[in-house]
Length: 372
Image (cartoon, rainbow, N blue to C red; front, side, top):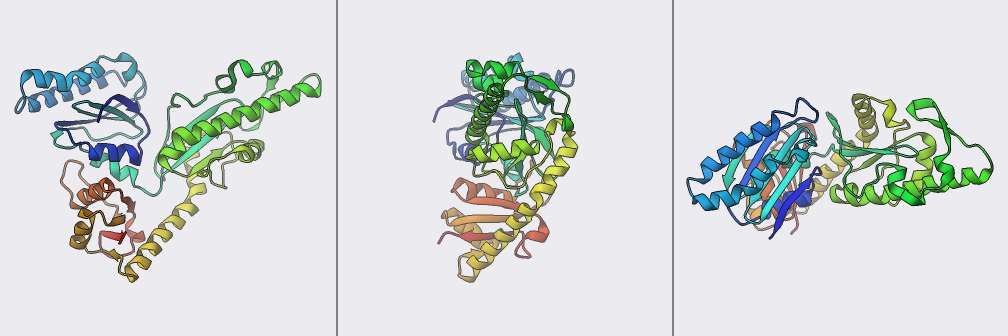
């Protein structure tokens, strides 16, 4: 497997499985908290360099000088990449191995960690990935978009990756009609301007066509780059008139029927999180009930168990289709039996969900539904 110098800010099950199944050692993992803005981000490169030195010291115990130099080359090149360090988020995970290098910019701070082993250290990632309360928000106005990902406690604005149009000019380019460019804008409700179209109705029609083209381009890009890789529910945050048009055009099956009837630019990030959670909470509780019922039905037919030993043996054979684990505070540096089990199930193609204690279908820390 060759996968060199890949960078992403989207954590997906596919990425986690790729990391879990990588076989060629040594597998090098670094985690650190980073910062989004100057001057707070200035010490980040120094900290990263110090962590690379720890990797180097560990590698020298088992490998030659030339081998260590080869393994660490992409890490040291990253240290000197000023553009990369100018666009960090709240945390960073870096994974390196022979013919493999992957950076993952995280939207939450993370405990500093360095490991060298036969596999990548992914425990700090999968607990977040398997939480049931995650969602995404598309913030849409007539000519710009913003994108967010969060859960009940935290909401973070994501960087718009290449291929996702940031504005109507970005999406349409030379196809943008002249009437749209000459529309006069005045202050409006909710932080969005109100457009006044001067002249004949034809200009209004051109502006409407541009808006429809823009919304279609946004819908395609969001589906490809955000919704399909994560399968997270998508909340639309926009003024009411934009809800109607976008929903008419959208082909995104992850777009939920409830939405936020505000321009997101008019809300603080914390207020947007509160409104988003009010929107998504009924679906979240419905999902918890479904997971519990699915396990109970499977167990009644002999296809489910909450016995740790039995579930471990089933996981080794690839029999676990769905694993439910009770959410609890864990030490990312510690060897946790349930985390190891979750990694094994994910590696074998099963689904893992972390649930609050009150939503667990049994009194134990886990419940598993078997394929056969």
